[in-house]
Length: 232
Image (cartoon, rainbow, N blue to C red; front, side):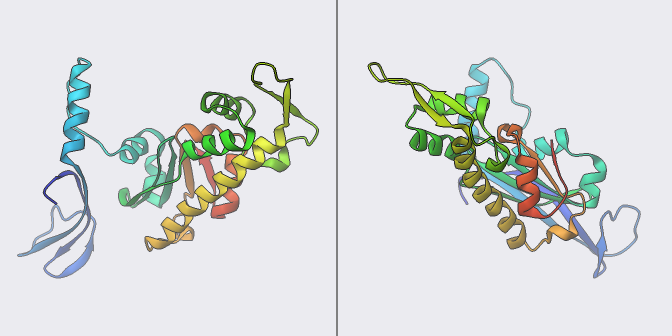
């Protein structure tokens, strides 16, 4: 597109004289080399705005790096990237799914549901403000309602003139579990749609981002993906 800028060109595979399967063609002899490349582009206008904002803050932009790629360098081991792994980044504004195999980024997608939706669900379900919902999520949240004692109550902020309000902590967990499970199922579907099988990515799933801190998230992710899971 006209407003697109190339961020990354990641070689997937090389073909030398018509034979494919070369991860690295350096040192080979031949007349013709072809490359299969995974291209990552971004909107030029968005990058220009970000660059201006960063420079106004007194910093110089060396280069832009796709968030899951940057996260992968921070949280994935060389062995995981080599064997095959799924990186699920649970941000507030978006959830990204990235697949690495043989040391290379193979697929990336951004999902429309994210941590912000979990907060919104709590706002509606508990009748509290956005800030209060975030505080409740961080202090009392869980991704597995069954692990929360049924009798445990939490105090909710009350409007002036109203009496004290309470809610079962299990309700908070139930609201969170429903949305997080949906989110993780969308991530699982994205992996399947990309043509990769979870079983063929033996390092399993690494979850990172703000939502990764939620108690019970490892168990919920393990249930959805039926694969090994760790927090990055």
